[in-house]
Amino acid sequence: MTAQNGFLLIADISGYTQFLTSSELDHANPILQSLLQTVAEQVGEPLHFWKLEGDAVLAYSTRQELFSGDLMLTFCENLYNAFATRLQDIVANTTCPCKACANAHGLDLKIIVHFGAFEEMQVGPVTDLSGADVILVHRMTKTEAAAETGVRSYALFSDAAVQAVQLQAAMAPYSQAIEHFGDVSMQVYDLARAWDRFRAGQERDFLEEEDGVWTYRRRIDAPVQLVWEALTAPEFKVRWMDRVGAIRMENPEGRLGPGSVYHCAHELAEFVYRITDWQPFDYFSTRIKDPAREGVELPETYHLTPVPGGTELRYTMGRAFDSAGNRSEASEQEAAGFLAEFWPASFDAMDPQVSPPS
Image 1 (cartoon, rainbow, N blue to C red):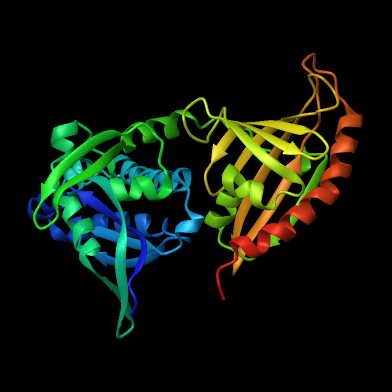
Image 2: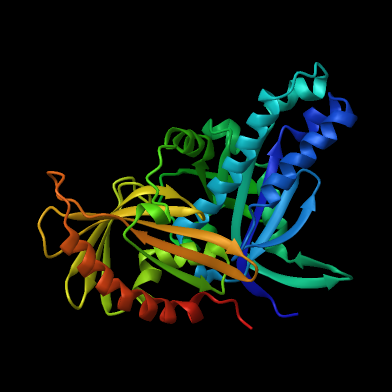
């Protein structure tokens, strides 16, 4: 087959060998199986599950055009958060005195991401990958990054991966000589710090449908991850939002998340909205300013639910209030009237951009 360019990702459990060799297998294996399954369940479009390999989950993607830096980091953080949450549950809920259960807390996860060329090979019912870059991403799992940077729980990106998705998050540069590849330049992202932020930011700003004044539902024939990217990444939003010519961002934390502000230049007005809650691939909430009424804001929630063959989107708009707490029903009525035309036209344009190729 013809070689193609794409992303290669390995989520590798650290401490695996020591854990197995110092623990009883009848308890160690179920713990590892549970952790690997938890990580594997987080893999979704535009990433494809590749295979399990001992202590690691492997995935890949050939759809570079659907990846932004924020989406790639979100994937890595979700993999780690799911792993860390499951491990926390295992440690907290066991009273077993065996070595396996006692040593589980020493396990950790590192994620390796590289961008390069590879070929897909069909071997019986299994799709495998081959090429020099496949070898390189495996070699990157054996670096001294943790010892040299002091970051134990990390995502390690090759410079090729950083450039492919234009990653701009704060990362530590790192390089190491790898046999047959020379000096490989990489970037280290601290996943444990992201996990701490995840646990600290659990306060919800979420509208149920009954909390709102207007709701729009839409089924989209694309996986949740791709719909999330289209809804949130400004470079993708501008491709499908009806009569929006440009989108400018303010990202106080350097990337999309709570506090980020969108400035959408629509033909009728500039619409400004701030992210208030951010739960990747599940929902996000914003507060949008009424461009016609100073100080009036309307809360919004975009809730994504996986369904067979696609995603169910529920958009709910809440009650409008000014800074003094006075409700503006006029704002609500005008916004609902505008959105009743805007969303159908916009999502008609989005659908073919996110739908998997036939």
